[in-house]
Length: 407
Image (cartoon, rainbow, N blue to C red):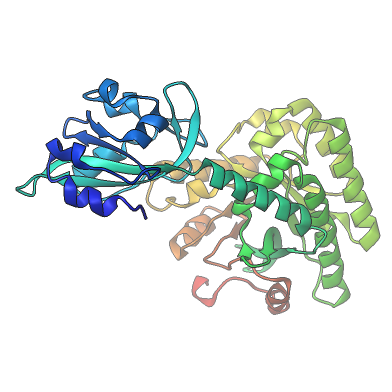
């Protein structure tokens, strides 16, 4: 990846030979440590990027000279040189790491870290070769944002649907709509790779309106062709479900318009909201949800158990369904705490006359555990991946989404 790696491997025969590393002018930054984790070498590019001169940096702890944080949550990144020394193998930082220079200037970096060895083959330290990719990331971000702004008008978004199944009958009880971006030249892009940018730019509002209209159109299509009345759930973002009066009114207006335009039963439309979205402005959330309920829309809480779970808000909000987060389902058959939490959520929901669905079901053991505890519905890759509408139609016509091995 970096033009200096072979030179580092060949020239740094032991910790005292860091000074022999001489990269080309304008090349990558290089910083090295000894076994104690103290800076033993840095080149001119590293001096510029860290803000430390070689003389001032030598023998200081690496974390003092090279301050690196996670670009998302701003927590300190794990020291990759220490890992390379401990494990005696090459490693890298996680993606989206930020180097904070001595004067506070920040750079997004990519790196490559390798242990170095003395003449006897023993680990003598480690070296990190890194570069500033901030400009490249900025250009990439601008390109993606520009493409997203065109995507809606150029009909590049599409929906896949993941089945939900009732555990008592094995019948398909509904589906969840999941957006995909068919970006020209890139193929089908999953939501995690572009929805956060839709949120940041505010594009999620018009795209969200498109999703609502598309879902209502699909509900009408399935009824028109005799497939049946199928409930479809839509994830609402925080920007769509904003406390701002204008945006919340826009959500209600678009929903009403879509329901009437396609002539569907509004009870076949379900909105999923996370606990954090509901609780960010609880008082206004209650009012908005009640207005949506008056339209006939069903409401469910997504990722239940990971945010502000409480009986108080479950009583106040007009919720129909609780969705247990996949975080608890993943180890529900191996972890006693996850099992206890899952059982408690099911019991609590049923005591409040609420429906319960578990997401992220990937094994027969998980499914059987949930069935034995009277969970109402399940959703996950063990049953079905998200599918195009045509494939969902085939499942609906069969009347069951549970694989034969699940009976």
